[in-house]
Image (cartoon, rainbow over all chains, first blue to last red; front, top):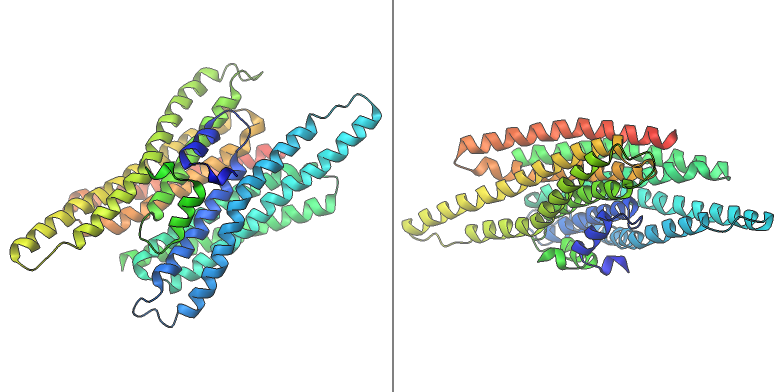
Length: 209
Length: 209
């Protein structure tokens, strides 16, 4: 599993001319870091004086942020697999009509997967942004800057995942699915940009108070 | 060295209630991923038909993006060390006047370090954004979405590092240094936000063409 490799090793492979890991995996790592920072702020807040009333909600948020962290970390490898299988599909033989037809079908299956993985990444990141926004209101003030980093990471991850939907969806023959995916991801990008700007500004205001 | 730990292990520690690693380290990883994606686009472009004229400039860019990747990866550990030494300084004894004075001095030294590390991270990320913008013009079109991810990552990293400057600089007694650092980082955040929005939009337009 790629997330068992070292950070240095991952960065080395990301920088290389090999097609994977690429931007999709980097996006999933950013999203997972965003979720982890929400978890951190929850964990740090527990037991702190003045944060007793927020604890039940923060405990629920932690359960969700940890689920999202797990999902996003798994997507680092899923993105590699989806991209590799798409590349393999394009390399299939196309000498006979039968081969051409099988190749076209495999490409469509792979394209759908290469659209669904970043779409799910975008959805998970949008949830992280919402959690981070709430964590900025409820969490321990001395680690509030970590919420600011978490929201910046999750928003960047979402916009990054969106690019992979924008690349792959247009080649899908299932137009209805493709258009729905593009619309959803555009909506998520818009909402997240607004939410993350609000949260970042709120964090900065708190730092100065 | 923390970047020799696995991605999963790092995420686990980031999510925990321990103060380090925190947002500063996450920022440095995002910046390093941004630099790595610029490197990847350069590496992929070499030898591609139609990209011969761009190769000399892309080779120079690769040298710089690899330097920046190395610097940013090193900052993951530097941020942990700076934060830990600041926490240790605050825990120093303050019973006697001599102890108080020594503690205050150590806090100032640590605060300066905890301002300089994110300031240098922000500077490096600003450079990555500039490189990514150029890579979007020059690089191999089929990996242009990776430039989009790289610029989103570097911009988020810069804004994240900026938060650590905003936290630590105000407590510095060297007001001139503190104000210069805050001004510089605000300027970098503004320029990068504009540059990254332009680059992301340009990447998206290319994806649709």
